[in-house]
Length: 404
Image (cartoon, rainbow, N blue to C red):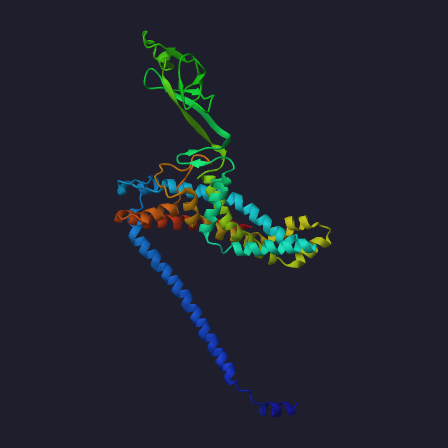
C-alpha cells in the first residue's frame, strides 16, 4: 500500500499529440460548418415564407377559397376547384401506390429467393427501384401519357374534344329535347351511338330531368297545343330534333383513360412508388432479427411473422415514407401538366374518374406566369394554402404514426 502513492507521484499524464489536437479542432470546425449550413437553410426557408406571406396574405378570403379562376376579374378569382382536384388526386394516388409499394418492400426484404436466377432477378428489381427514385418527374409524365392517356392507341385514338374508346360502366346516353312549354327538359334513351341527333315523329320511352319515366306526348304544331300545363311539360313538337348527351356517374370507367383524374393519379403513383418502396424497406430492415427468430421458434410461418411481427413493428417507418411520398405527390406539377395539360378554367372539381381536373401546382404556375400583377399575388396566396394543406396532411399522418 505504501508503494501506491509513490507510483502516483511518478505518474505523468501523456500530453495530447499535435495530431489529436488537430483532429479535435477539425471536428469542432466541421460541427460548426454543419450548424451554419442548417441555420442558413432554415433562414432561407423562413425568408421565403415571409416573402410569400407578405405578397399573398391579403388575398386569402372566403371568395378566394370558394371561387374559381376568373380570367377577366382577378378580384373574384379563387382556387376551390384546384383544392378539390389536388385532394382527390392524392387520395386516389395513395390508394393505388401505398398497398403496391408496401407489398413490394415486404417481398423484397422478407421473401428473398434462394434460387440463383431468382436472386439475380431480385437484385435487378432492387437496382431498378433505386434508379427510378432519381428519374425526373417529367419523364414519368411522358410515360403516363403513353401508358394511361393513350394506352398505346390500342383502344382507339384520342382527338381534340372527343375521346373514342370502350365504355364499361357509369354512363347513360340520351337525346335531349325541350318540351312544348319551353321550360322542361325531356330525355329520350339513345339506342344508336352512330346517330348524334334524333327527330321525334311518334311517342317513345322518355324520362324527366330526375330520370323518372314519363308518358311522352307528340304534338303536331298544326293542331292546338295541350291546355293542361302538366301535359304540356311532357309534350314534344313533332319533328323536333334532339341532340345526344351523356350523363356520367362518379364511377364512370372507359379505356383509354384520356386526360383524366385516373390517368393523372396513376402517373403520380409511378412517381412516388420508388420512395414508398425504399422507405418501407429501410423500416423493415430496422426490425431486429431476434423478433423474426422468436416468431419462427414458436412455429409461425414466414407470412405469419410478417403479418403479426415484422410489419407492425415497421409501421411507423412505413408511415414516414408515406408522408414523404404524399408530400411530393401534392406538389408535383410537371407530370400533371403533361397528362392533363394547363387548362385551369374549371368551375368545379372532377365529377367522375374520367373527368379532367386542375391541381394547385398547375394553378400556381399559371397565375405566376400571368403578366397581371394581381394574379401573381394570387399565386403567392395559393402557395400559402398549399403549404398549409401539406402541413395539415403531415400532422395527421404523424399523429397516426404516433398512435401505432
